[in-house]
Length: 147
Image 1 (cartoon, rainbow, N blue to C red):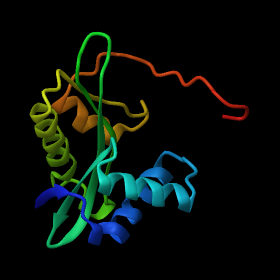
Image 2: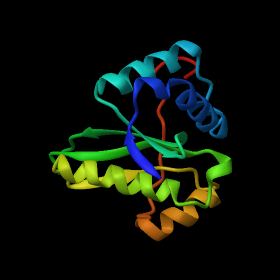
Image 3: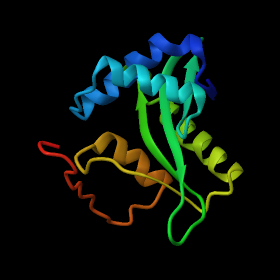
Image 4: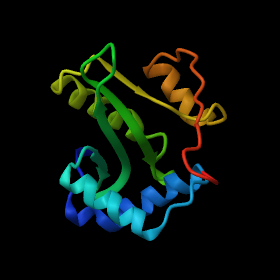
């Protein structure tokens, strides 16, 4: 398995995985939003992407970003993590989590975290092995009508 930053020739395989991720979470995403996300990931425009390849095929993706907070200068947030169903159970997600951790350390991050739905039992089985669940519950406040 090779883990590396996403590259221009990963576009089609990346989109298939990104669509799988968005479908899993039932998040409607337009073609224009996928195109913009891809452009931002390649440009490292505040967001970063890693891909996991097995035998040259992209089988997993991780998107992450850095932000500041009141208490920590640099924090790393793993925003999206997805493994192709056929590649699950082969250590892809764990390898991507570790690769983002390396990037976080390189940036001097003090904290590295992510979110998942409480019903995502498959992912949580891995997350419970590699990280601490501190029991927070997320709330989203709608900033726009219908949002």
